Length: 91
Image (tube, rainbow, N blue to C red; front, side):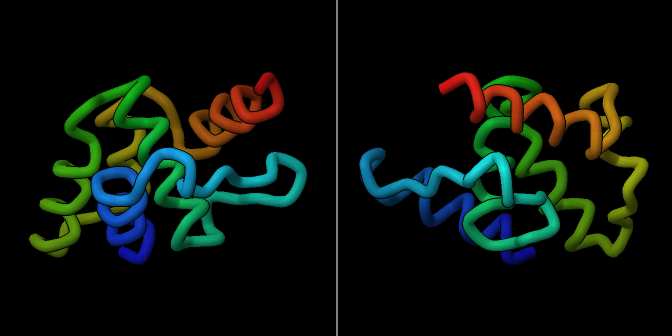
């Protein structure tokens, strides 16, 4: 939940130069807040532009589970995270 809130704050309202950039050597999607928000931004830009809306709806309806990652993107959260971390390392 915190990651969704930070996604909205940092990637919808804050200027680009102030947005968080997780450290690929230390970050994990379970860190929550800014790290998860940044991960969700990458997912929305690269996998499914409606992913945040879908996860928000699933949580509000009490039906969130880890299988939704694969359902929405075709990949597990760990596979997606590994791909995201590689993009951070490449920058």
